[in-house]
Length: 314
Ligand code: XIL
Image 1: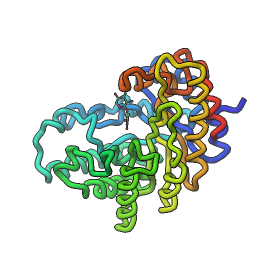
Image 2: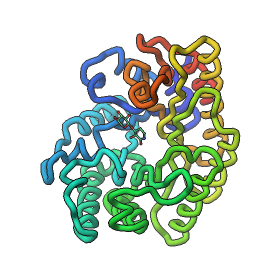
Image 3: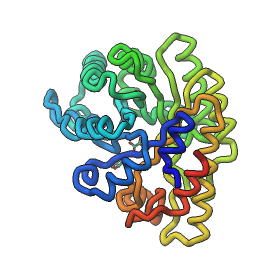
């Protein structure tokens, strides 16, 4: 049977996985599936600010370099994740009580340094991540509170200057449906484009619950693509109350297919990334109490019905 990667290559799109550094280093069953099935990778954690610069001015590139080198050796593209986010910031930055002007300089330096290091090796950057509340207002964050919404345009401009070839994304969750949050993002994206800001795509994280792929998802993605933007599913997983029944696993398979078709059925869908490979390492059980079994492979690396659903959707 053709692999996910085979299907995606044939369509000229990406099928990606978020990669955890531990198993990347020492688990051959993990890397075997990664390299056979996926033509794109995202760092699950190692390109986040707390991982890259744990103390001010002292950088930790080893794990991020390892992923980029792995991708290059296996002809995989890399999605960069993420530059300006409210979470997973180093404590020196979170607790530093910096002025607006200092924060502006710190953010620009982070972008110059990080994007510059991987220039030409990253096809898309999630420049800003999770900037909205559910009601469409701007989420409180270090950046928003001290710099105001203008930090988004600045971050996009700085990233573009550091790597003009990379496609620059705004990424968020619960924006897959047509709702208050996606309406607010749509308005922001339109304004940024009108202002000539280098915004090239929208990342729809797509952390779903089984049976709940939003019915408005395809039309919602299409309105963004009608602005001339790329759309991508960037963090797909579909969680199930555990233990998962065979009925739920079958529904999950359908959901993987539907979600994939909702993106690939829209012009300018660049691809789909799943947030992990195997249920063995998914973030879901640790984050959503009582849920699990969210990914295409089970804990022993057997392909689940979800794998077949995803494959049919590609
Ligand atoms: C998650 C990782 O999967 C976890 O390992 C980590 O502890 C917390 O972050 N939205 C995002 C991702 O943009 O960066 C998050 O990743 C999941 C939600």
